[in-house]
Amino acid sequence: MGLVYLKRFPKTEAGIILRHLIRKLHEISNHKDRTRSLIKNALPNMFYYLDDSKIPKSSNGLECRFSYLKNNLNIHRGLTKKNRKNFILWYNYFKYNP
Image (cartoon, rainbow, N blue to C red; front, top):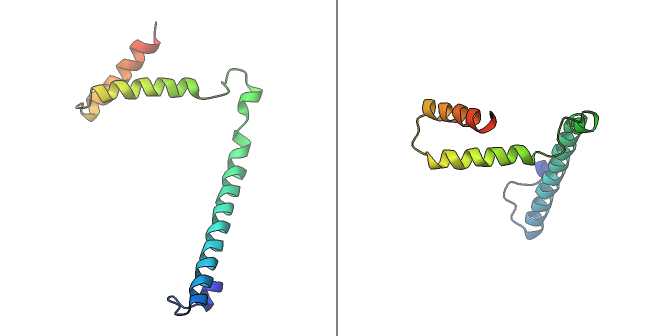
């Protein structure tokens, strides 16, 4: 509401400083609101691994698999979308099926 009473381009130094402070306060409150809603929405789904022992505590295993896949895809950069999809399917088939 404070920005409504200030000009868009204040001429005095005090007006410039006040406008800058009000804009920063608005950014801080928006950032806090976003963070609060993110935590509030994510909290119910964060601790499923405590109840189910089959779920790993971290995603390091998945990240490792994805990094190997990304490295192999980078080696074969010129693939079309269809061939890229087939490459991923065959890669997973040969890598994770004994």
